[in-house]
Image (cartoon, rainbow, N blue to C red):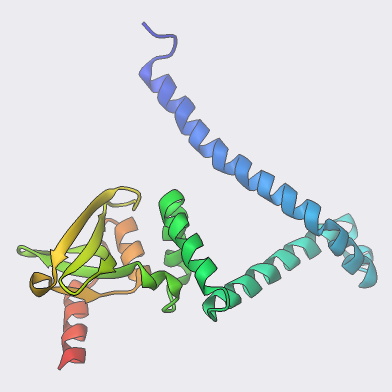
Length: 201
C-alpha cells in the first residue's frame, strides 16, 4: 500500500497545478515591479501622487505603465509592425499555453490579426453532422485541419482533407473558442451556413 492513497494524490497534484501558475504570476509581477519601480517613483514624485495615494502611488503608477505597455505592444502587433515576431510567439503560445489562447480569444476576439495566417476557425461537415476545427495549412489539393477536444484545445486530432470533398464555413476565433469552452453551446450552425451561402450567391 502506498503512503498516499489515490484521492490524496489527486488533491496534492490538483493543488500543485493551481500553485505553479500562481507562483509564476507572482514571480512575473515581482520582476516587472522591480524593473518599473524607479520610473514609477520618479513619475509619482513629479506628479506629487504621494500626497493623494501615499505609499500605494508607486504601485498604482506601475500598474498604469504596465497597461500602457501592453496597449502599445498590442497596437504594434495589430498594425503588423512586429508581424513576424507575433506569428512565432502566437504559435508557441498555442503549443505551450493553449488555455491562455482560448481565454484571449474568448475575451477580445480576433480582428483578422496574424494568428489567422495559420489558425482559421471553421465548422465543417462530416457525415451527417458538423464539427468545429481549425485550418492549419492548405495546399492545392489538401487542407490540414486540427480538431480539438472540448472544453480544452490542448488535445485533439489532425486530419488531411481533400479540397474537392471538404465542405466548411468560416467562423470567428471568438465564436469557436467560446463554443469549445461551453461544450458547443451558443454556436448557431444554421445561421452560419445561411450567412455563408448568402455571401456566395
